[in-house]
Image (tube, rainbow, N blue to C red; front, side):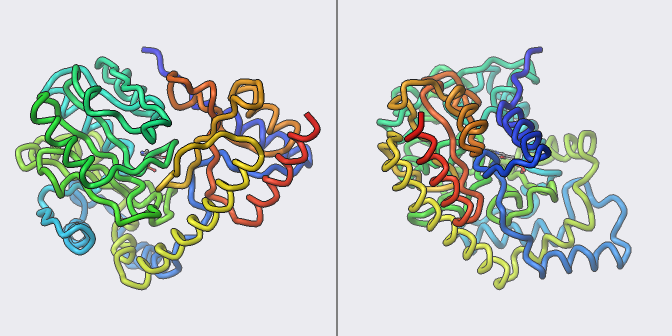
Length: 375
Ligand SMILES: Cc1ncc(COP(=O)(O)O)c(C=O)c1O
């Protein structure tokens, strides 16, 4: 089994080494919200620990949290999702692995994902011994597949808002995808982990268009709680029992005190706070997008969600990997080479994460500007 490493981790390690040697690095490589956990949630989790909620929970998650997530689907998307179909998982990543295996067992071993796209999909497919089907997407089409390309596989993982491009599928694109899945006989796994971090209309879940899909989401991005390792999966009714067996055998359960703490994420004041985080992301995106264009990066699309800009560096006469390594050692700005996200034209790109303060982003832009003038 051959898994690829995450080059961004190599960048991060080199940056940490430089920091240990006393240098100052601006981190625009990591895909992790910089905002704090809302205090209400921290307090609720601490209360759960103190009051003795420190044992295993039900493998599917505590009923109160599954009910709260079900309510969230109703109020956010106007979709009824019975709590029975919702499983709380230790982060969204193991939920993704389970989703891919469950749908591949039903439909077939060819699993598609976009290239460029989130690299763990490919590695999960490899890990499970299934067949990888990368679907090439291009900046001209806002990094989204065209309908004609959606065939020749059994399962497709989609990701909107997307890592690394910030692409967001419109309701009609999701509807077309569902139609296409029926016509071409494939199943859809929708990774909605960046839902809520969108700069146009509200996000639309695939469940507004079908209940035959599996949905993945969690508390890592909009709710800014990456270290909690708390996610959820919504499965079709006929997969509930199977998913329960998967949870019992593979996860046991998600961390119990954090599940109680997570109930507070759905309080209005907390959701409002997280919406405030999104307004900050938007300010950063607007600033960074226009500055990168001014510096000579080619960016001919508007990233509409998540906190990433996938920028074409071909105008600088080098490849994305060398560009990233030199930006780190010479400009002290850490960014991720595009090759981390696939092999379709990715050597031309680097990914900027703006999950960092506007002040730090401004410092990064100044440094890049000076460096590009010098080199
Ligand atoms: C597209 C995508 N899906 C899933 C994940 C994993 O999220 P979690 O922290 O819930 O495991 C990430 C994390 O960066 C991601 O970018």
